[in-house]
Length: 70
Image (cartoon, rainbow, N blue to C red; front, side, top):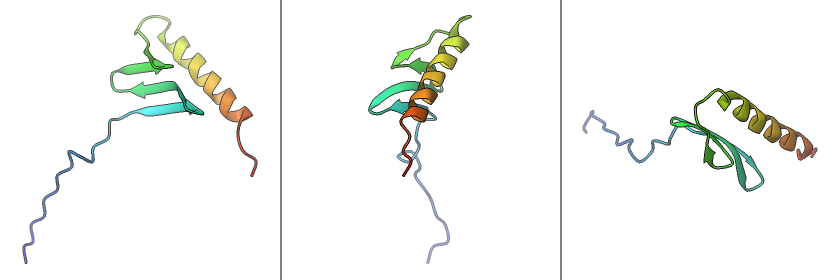
């Protein structure tokens, strides 16, 4: 019996991304290359944080209003 074990993790590696969905539509994505609001990449400028905050706030309100009480 061989004591050496090797793994090929290339197929198991998932991109480092956080997604916020409302039903089937993507509202906010946090990825290695930046932020996306409704699928559109946000430019890194003075308004980036505000746009991301607003998208997150809208998602949070949607999630709160549509949560299940079961």
